[in-house]
Amino acid sequence: MYNNLISKRHFSLSALLAATTFALSGCGTLYEENPALQAESDSDTAKVYFIRPTPVKPKGVADKPIEVDYAGKPLIKISEGTYTLVKLLPGKGEITTRSQTQFINQPQPIEVTRSRIYTLLAGRTYFIHLKRIDEEFRGITYDPEPVDLVTAKSLAEKLRKWGAAKQEPIAAIEEVPPTPKTSPLEPVYPEKVYPGSPYLLDKPVKK
Image (tube, rainbow, N blue to C red; front, side, top):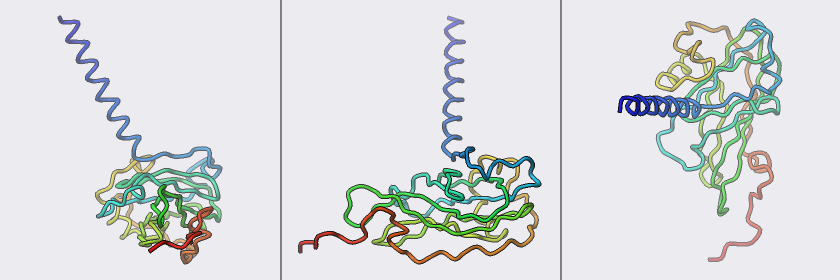
């Protein structure tokens, strides 16, 4: 009986640890293969915080984890209600969000993208708000929008931290030097936002 009790307790502890690990892993993923992550020391890097708040209204597939690419390569996958810190090599590159949305009359969700070009300097800190934009009949996209420290603190206040942000939370930052401006968000050009997906219907809709 004693052995059975120990066994049950061990199983319960193992199950709890497994559940905790699963919950933490659901926050996001860092794609370590991205070449921009291969810095030798922190002094050689730009600190980039990615912030994804929880929206007020659920929007189906658009609420799923989204992927963020840097310089054409996957960088992170991030869930709602979380933020993280990624340390990148200095340089100029495009930061792109990839997410799913329900589009026009198509039965299956499609991938949508939005991009901005960032100039990353060594020793500087950047805050990127993955801002959800509802384009109504054109679907939902995420703008990799630059924000200042005050805005970043407000956005991140009640969010879960994962990755390097656990050791360097936004709340602990007192000030940051200015950073170069990013490129503006382009208008919603269908051929860029919905790559490979027809924007207009091939056949007229029957009334």
